[in-house]
Image 1 (tube, helix red, strand yellow):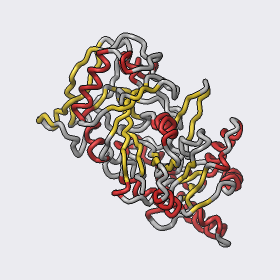
Image 2: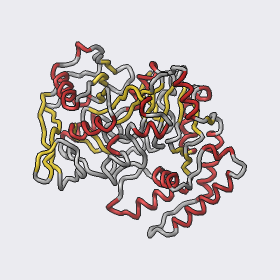
Image 3: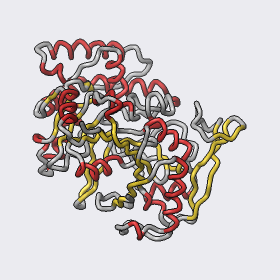
Image 4: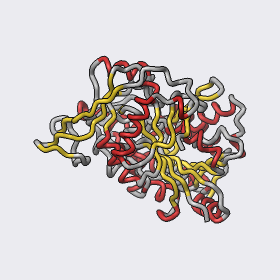
Length: 425
């Protein structure tokens, strides 16, 4: 039997997972998304065109790969329809290469309303939700109230939908804030989205994947968001609502731990974060502004500006450990070109002590980053194509990271296009 390779983010999301899934798809027969929802934005650039996916796996542009939306994913039918429309516009035959797990949960219009009301009610304590209804959908899932894709095939589907919608409307009436909405209009778009959703084959994905494993198919599990947003291991409560770490591939696809092969961890050469929450290495000076400008650091899903800071190796090592990462891909190394010097956080001062592990809280009142400084590469690296063209200063930075986290960097991204990728082994 074959092993299932796994690809996930090691920071607060936005690491560039979509590009590397696209690059690795040539080596795989099946790409399977295992968690999250349309709060994800996976950006791919090739043939001078930019594509942003939110739910559909990033292998969809390769005609020989099957793409599966796994049971751990939550699906917004309206956003899903928009994705299909985008693919159709670019003549992508998704009908022959896309499957949906019957066990994936559906995001209802009222889930989005609950998300908005909850976030507004928090005031200054808001977590920075994308307002896509992700949290309330996962709450219904764990509360055993949710509706799944397979329910669309049941004769009493509409009755189930109406029952849950009415429950949500009652919940909305208990918030101390009022939001304006036109449910009838939202439902028109929702049911149109469901028509598009039904164009895609529904499958019993666990059985499908295990047959593929037995047939020695090469499978890549694609994660969304990042490890530091994991519901258990992230910077709680400023996290997402799903398991973004390697364990999420097991629960989100029905793959056993001993069936996991390579674990590709995706990281930026620096660090970014969207929304609220602690960020020890965040920069508020011209260096942070330069990273944001050169790196075009705006959320692919929300368009919100990303907070930028130096690479946090303490947090990165923690993410490597909890995921069992075997290979690293370093993204956006080109963004740092031309800095006089760059820094990486190699320890924290935490409650008066120097530590090198990720503590219970990294709130700025308790954590002060301790930095190691590096010379930066001055040349434009966006056109380099071979290992021997990599500047010595960049190689030194790579070597330091590898020794710190004890995992090799095997892929180096020097630009957004799929062609701007160097395999280091």
